[in-house]
Image (cartoon, rainbow, N blue to C red; front, side, top):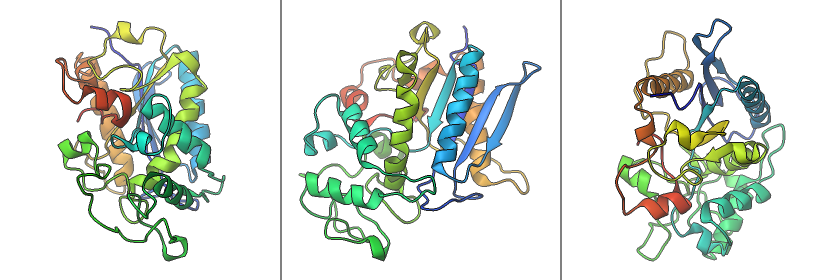
Length: 295
């Protein structure tokens, strides 16, 4: 069985409001063939999201020139909980409508200064007319439609706090959390515009999983003519063992890249892209919420 991919790029994201490096910043792990045609790992730690986007664009362009298909994993959700697009009154496929909405609203300067709190507040106003469901902000950013702390629990008539994949993994942080440790929401709002640009600049030769591929096992023939597949990953999904002096984030990206490559070599990666049999969650996963590769 032929491999699905020839390279693997794993991205550990950050919503930092200023340039940052080291722990809890952006780490990009690239596992690809070197000049000796051996798989080799490179770790990059760009200080800003603008630098990260430029680096990723360059890596993908290089792999395309070599005709090597790449799996690109981002460790933040590529979709929102079911019903979010409808609450915002967006038209079209929910996942794409939300990606376009966020891409149009977010302003992210080369210095990492961004308006994610203002966007979260605007989405709250449009969805519920109150400081909910997005929450979390430093005191200077707190406003009528965005509270510093979690305002209340999610009720049965509210948008879900967690996506179905997060419920399955019992993930600790919801997408609605914009600040503090594990601020998934901040990563989503600053990350989705970059995924959108990277994907759209490649036209029909790129796909976002599972929205554009289906939530199902993939084969090499399914990816014929595709240069890159963008997917959601979870940094802690597989165990990693940092070497002395090695940053945890870097070790996690290495572990993910090596695990996906190892499974691909054995013909077992295809099964991670979705259930072989029908699943009642399929429509929700494929249309709006997405899934974590390997979950």
